Image (cartoon, rainbow, N blue to C red; front, side, top):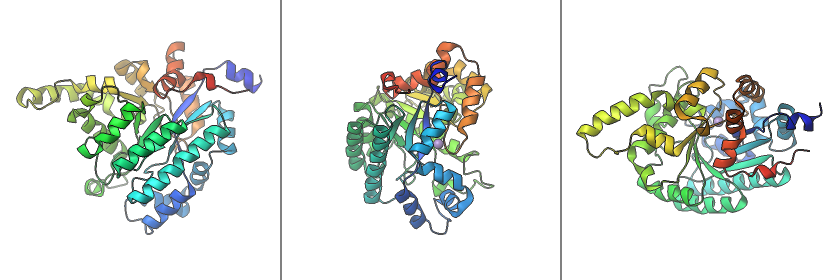
Length: 344
Ligand code: MN
């Protein structure tokens, strides 16, 4: 069967948490944490040569990446600058690098029409600059933003960041809250490497999402959409207990939001399967949230795309559910036109 015939006989696949890096970003990380004993320890290890293939894959948003996508039947990647993006740099450097990152995505989208979409990088630490860059990035055709969880130990529910949430809603840019290492003040007890993807990322990113939910800030932005990777960073599993404890507190503390946290979660959040190729976890989330809230993702290049494709195909989902998770939900959420399909 030709590649075109194979593409026509399978569901369209869009992967939505797919990372890239810029050389200037990696240089900035080297300079910011030369000894690897700070916030960027993870990057110090990577840049010291621990995972050379990760670096070369991150730096390629050209032919090499397209060849991988063709070989595995991935029609489109939604690109985002790899974590922690620009949120560890000073505000001016962050804004400059954010612009370069968004221009790089727009360049890849133009060079390979229909194969890439993008989440804009913004300097969260400078909200007016972040809003300006969101407007510019939307003009370039980027259709979401990525926020690598905390910025200097601060979270999006804080009043300073209201303009960012407001712009995201107004520009129809879903906010993908992606993990990063914990703030130093919280990282102390995370021994044995627990601060990383094995546990700390989900704890940190889940905390960020729960702050948005319990602060009540989302009530002000009814059309704002938030995306969590890694099957919802644990939150779907905890929804029953979160609601139970919220109701218990709400009886005594009238300042609690009246709406159940699970209702806020179902209204504002989508989750993706990035890095969670677990059939039981997907079945649970389908039962808990419904198929329209779940999007497929690989977490390239940190996890193997071949495994993610094999896994989702092996789930043997009903046609409608499979199509929604693999592409339909991403097309709707990120306003990706199916007409951009240009495989030949
Ligand atoms: Mn990721």
